[in-house]
Every structure is written in structure tokens, then in C-alpha cells.
Length: 79
Image (cartoon, rainbow, N blue to C red; front, side):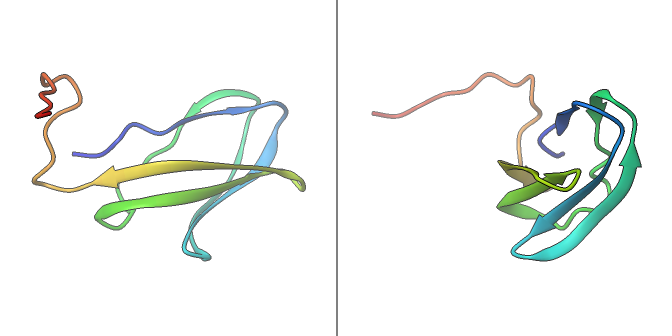
């Protein structure tokens, strides 16, 4: 189970995604909202650096692992 990864690409561009400066995804994507296939991303929780085109950089937290609850599961907090 992984955090869904959807990004907005303002115009058709090369998209590169890095985990700790290591390239883990690279693809030319069309403009619009794009769902990124994270099947080959490493397990764990970490920050992604997403480079869209030559100058647009965003950061997102991402988590993937077999022990994570599904996205639709109720969330409980202990205070």
C-alpha cells in the first residue's frame, strides 16, 4: 500500500522524482493532473523532490509499505 501520488503538470514536461538525491522516476508527461505509478518506489516513509520541467520543484512526503493501513481506513489518534 502506498500514498497516492498525483501531481499537476502545467505544460507537457519532463518530470523527475528524487528520494535523497537519487533519481527514482523519470518520464515525459502531458499537461494536467497526472497519477504517478509508484510501484517501483522503495518502501518506507520519506520526502520526495519532484522536478517538473526546468525550474518547477515541489516536495511531498511519501510512504509505502505492506504494514501501512489502506488510505480509506479510519484514522485514530491518542492524545
